[in-house]
Amino acid sequence: MSKELGYVLVTPYTLRKSRTGGVLGRLLSTTGLDLVAARMFGPSPELVKRHAELIRGNEEIWPEIRELLSEYIEREFVPTKEGQVHRVLLLLFEGDNAVRKLRDAVGGFEDSIESADTIRGTFGDFIKAHDGSVTYFEPAVLVGPNTQSVKEVLGIWAEHSAAAGGILDNAISLADQEHVQKTLVIIKPDNFTFPSSRPGNIMDLFSRSGLRLIGAKLLRMSLAEALEFYGPVQAVLREKLGGMAVERACKVLQEEFDFAMPDVVEQALAKSLGPAFGDHQFYSIINFMTGQWAPDITGDETIAEGKVRCMTLVYAGENAVEKIRNILGPTDPSKAAPGSVRKEFGTNIMVNAAHASDSAENALREIGIVKVQEDTVKRWYECYYN
Image (tube, rainbow, N blue to C red):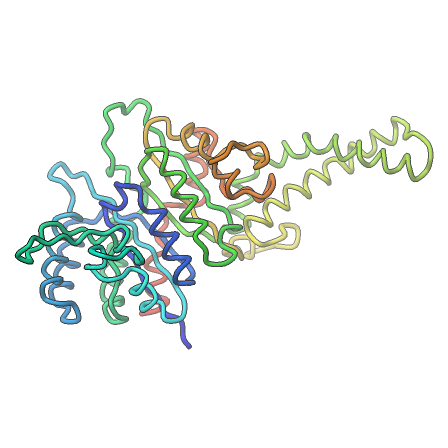
């Protein structure tokens, strides 16, 4: 059975209500598909017009729904008169029968009337008056009904991806601009070992911050990116862990040889074993984030995509760094407060579910390293349809 590429568009209303995590968790856990790309869009008038026209001409969609849906896109996706864009999150999934599985998980437009076993049943609305006229319509997400429709819709969004997608600085408007910050979150690879609701559940916890999600990207971190990203940690690990390694080594040597290690031995170990142990811990972090052991990788392999996936998210708002880190919790999950991301999903100091920037300055540095702005949608589209 050949793999397919499918898409889900998370609507501006769903994003504003911070239901994105619930939607993503449901999609991953019910379909078993692999999430391969994510990109935030601020659709331009041209993109909105072309998508709406495509819906109007799609005879696979019931006429009533066709007009409702095209009008909804024209009304809710287009920028405001002041030029502020509305956020739309594009998620790409890959796997066997991806289009059908996504369609079934999302459900029909009328599922919200009596059902909650689909995404639209839980998060959407389709309200009719007694005479049968539709009084309120919110689809929650948009999905392609068949492979041909997926190809056509993705073709339009891929064409506009570079210009209309990325980090949307013009998607939020806050009165107190002085305290507005951006911060980076990385949902780590331990949450993507198999399709599960964990990435969505983590996003759901971060939604308590009240911040706006303005950027997203699925990332296979290269070795070069990881070394640059975590580079400042290496010296800290050498210093912090070196003394502990020497102390443990001297204790073992004393038990083995039955005499206390003289200062000259401790000093020699401090110069050799200490840094080596710190480096080993550093390379273990790099291996966790990339699936590669740094000392074994050379040349062009260092800039190739890593072997494991993670998800990068950019949040914006007042005091964003502090708000996100409070929800994240301390590095050691055993010391984290109940309800924090690391308490709920972390395992140990390294496998601790997520990373968050520790300052606004570091956030800008880290966002640049992992290239959240980079367009991966067009690459996936061309992989399947070019």
